[in-house]
Image 1 (cartoon, one colour):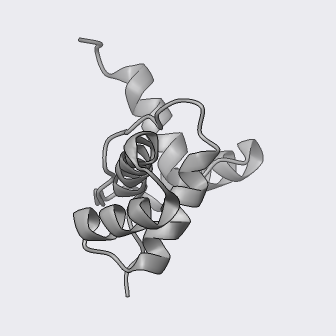
Image 2: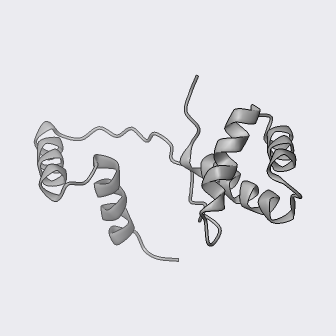
Length: 105
């Protein structure tokens, strides 16, 4: 089974936080979370346990998608080397570079 995206996880944690705030007890919260998200009681319990420790909502970012480009071998080697030296993933390095280069607004 595929893992849940970071965006969906943040949404579920925020939902669990809201359910905990209004639920009478943990079993009721588990049942509501499982029903609302169409997940097992065990998964619902895990979200609720994690949400208990949150002091504020989890920020929900943009969902990531694959974006394929063709670059020269030399440039790819340089990018990989730079990412390794800076201890960044290729995705994070390229995202930062594009945000810095693209006009804001």
